[in-house]
Length: 554
View 1 (cartoon, one colour):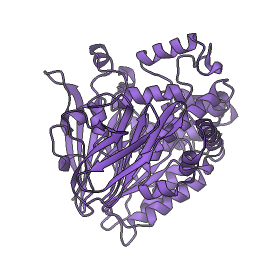
View 2: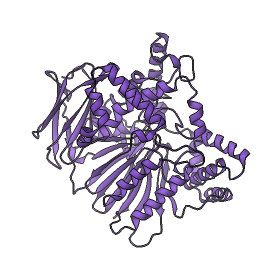
View 3: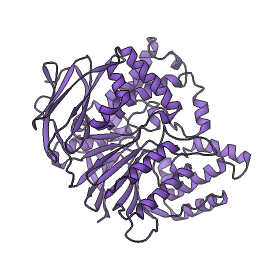
């Protein structure tokens, strides 16, 4: 029996070989207990903010490479699993295969016939449907949500209706009323609606209660094109509702997404987490999170959203490529110096067989789009004069020219790091960039030409989970893979005095535009990729069909 006291969750967020964390939201304070059939159990007291009550339960001492069932008690009642169902996790095999399911850009709209017709089947629902038919040992070891888990600036019709009702009642942020953000998410309470809508629906809820998830933020957590340029930033900060949005976005992101990215050991040592739990009142917690949100927005070095995880011989480094940007037109950086130093250290401190860089935005765009973005950055920085510079800056915002290629210094830094890793005596078998954002999916292989048994280097881009591109933009992406178009735009970037990248890449597969998910499996030195796309079957279930398979390295 499931009590109404469990609002959202459990979300299984971290699962290692011997430990795990579970995330919950309840509608009242209390004590939550997670009990496993393997013996270890854990419990935690809830803590509240904005009328919501949250808890994270950490378990240690679990057996490795084992399917473990669990149940959740709140007070005297078992609140999960649902009646007749089984709740389970599978701990990591330190020496076995690891499968990552990944992608980005998922609208939380319902599964009505109208919604399925408008934005298609949900890849996470398809993954959840498949999971229910498998044993836990066949599940992915991690679900990587690479940005735009929620759309604060473009909520579903149902959420818009709730927002309008709230505005009419005089509730919520006063600054948003009568503005361009009136029908957008503006505070913590409204952000919680997005998470409830997106993660509370079946079979996604059961998927998240079984498969551990890693998450990173992207622009729609705040607003489209967030931190694309200094001029965008200067304009948005004049909006009366912006500070409310920042506080709501970062406070809720910290609660709903970031905390679960941390291991039990990292949670135990996290100062902000400790301070929030120890605060005497909900109001004090809300103030602490509001102060933190405004501080990290204005000075990203005061916190960090990036994180890393090891899955046996595979290391995942998840990079915050939004909040930590440097926007100075004379020294643009996708990540600032402090963040980049952290990324380098995590990449060089170990010798994994496979090194994965998770970034919401692709490192390697389709070649034609790469040249376009590099041309635009050079022009915006004055290579064609002051007048062209102003036009270039406007085009940067209007055309969403803000990926790694549009931050040339950071693009070159990543290339340098890749060569350094490739030339190491203990170079990995593969170096892979996992990304989303662009609402199309493709596989691009890079050739760095460092000689010897170089790692397999690929850009793996999967987007969307559920938010397809309109047809005109699809046509642009199809043009972007044509060699003739890439050559023309390459000449254009050279005319703007852009230095060559020093390595080459091209699309091996794709682009695809339908809702889907990629599954990457690493085992020993081998890496294998499977591309799945979502559809509604004859029985009305959302399911997945394999579109493409390829071996990245043996």
